[in-house]
Every structure is written in structure tokens, then in C-alpha cells.
Image (cartoon, rainbow, N blue to C red; front, side, top):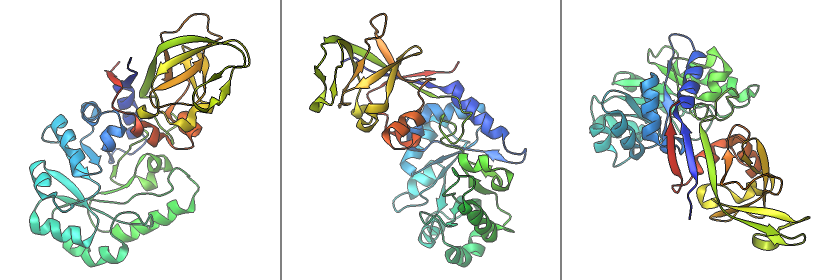
Length: 347
């Protein structure tokens, strides 16, 4: 079967990173989050492009993810691990020169005993109740941590996508209370926090979704583009049905294109009824259910027979697809499967 093409625009990626970097002051470092295989777009290629643009600090979720990033970047750039120093991670942290963001007393003890003198960071819980040391834990460890090779103190905003949410101010005050006077670089903001303004920037920002073209960074250029090859065109008479469970019935004689992609490629079934694919600027509605490998599209109104149709383009973004599926752009990007022919462009 023909293969769909996922085109990753590295120039758009780096332009988005630079735009987010420009929103902060001259004393603020802009890092880059490349976890989940670079949000589904290939962490090695993404990290190399961002490093060439000036990023010197990268964040991943787990040590296993860091291996691909270190291989791509070589020695030098700092790679921080959100999950901290887990049992069994010691050799990888040492050999790849990673900086674990320690989340608990247990992790702190494990780290300083297994790798004395090795750099680390600390993640604090300022109210999200997901990951990081709570205020009492940090109070007990603060002086011990500050006497070690600590590189960064961070926390994570729960509601940064909602600028007026009171949780933002609540967490900011908690973060300041826990960290003021530490004399250690601090990081509080991902993409949403950058957009909240200078009070949230501190010393290091760590954009993720905004670099990859997603909300809440409305000015972002699209980074991911998907083209779907047309496998077959068929004529359907009025009253005939298309796809599983007869969910779409032709109201007129119609031409139906079957394209090669489906939910195995991260195109969720739930987005079907509201989603279009495009021939240039012309929208073509998805009809019938999205199946594992195939999608059916009404192309009756097209003047010619298309060879491929676009799913992600300037007219239909990852966030539009996410709305259609009842989810978020992060999930759309990170769900893109391994079957795509990946094409990287930089201009």
C-alpha cells in the first residue's frame, strides 16, 4: 500500500523557537523540550536543528529518550531529564552526562550516593500535584541540595494556557516563596508561561508545543504537514453507503477517493465527521468512518482526479484536528505513527 508523507519543516521549527526566545529578556536562556521523540517529529533531527539555531539546553521525559538526543548532539549541550534519577538510571546519567531533575528525597539520596558531584536539578511541586518535591520535602533538603552541584530549580504551571486563571498567580507565589534567595538558576515556564509575561520567565524557559506549531502560541508557523496518497477512486450512486457501519450515505452520485492512512497513523476515528482533506486550497470532506489504514473522501466537486490529498496544511492545523477529535494538539502530534515516509525540509 502507498505510504503517507509527513513533512517536517525544520525552518518553521527554528523560527518558532527564535520567536519565543525573543519574547524573553536578554538574561533569560531559552531551552527546548524534545521529549516524546520530539513531539512525534524525530528528536534527533529536531534537536540538531534547534542546536544550530542556538539552543544549548534540552529537556526529555526519561533517560531512555536522552540517548537519541545525545547521539544527535554529541557532547556539550545539556540534556535535562524530567523524571529525575530513577532506579537503574545511574549508568546512563553518568555515561551520557545527563542532568536529572530530582523529584523526591529518595531521588536526591540515590543521586548523591551513586554519583557524588554529578550535576543535577530539582523539580518542585507548586500546586499541580503531579511531580516534584512538595514544600516540606524541599525545606528539609534545601540546604543539602544547595551545597551540591545543583544546576537548576524548576516547577511546572498547571493552567498556563488560561492567562486569567488564578492558579497561575498562586503557583508563581509558591515558586518564589520556595526559591527566592537560592542563588540557583530557575525555570518556571513552558510555552504558555512564556506568553504570560516577564514575571514568569525567571532564568530559563523551556518551550515545547509552541515550537512545533501548536497553541497557545497563535503566531506559530506550522511545522508538520501530512499528504495522503489516493489509492482508488470509485463512483457511488445516490443512496449507496461508504465505510464501516454505513455511517455515510450518498445524497447524489458521488466520486469517493480512498486514501492511504488511518487511525494506525494517529488519525483518530473521532475526528472523521468534522475533518477535511485538501487539494491545494479546496476542501474535501471525509465521509464514512476512518478505519485503521484507509480514509474515504468525497471528491465529487474536484475538476480532476487527485493523486494525493493534504490532511495537515495551512488550512487545517494540528489544533483544528485536535478540536475535531475532542483532544489537544499535543496528542495529535505525538500519535503520528511510524508508517509515514518522513521528509525533512529546512527552507
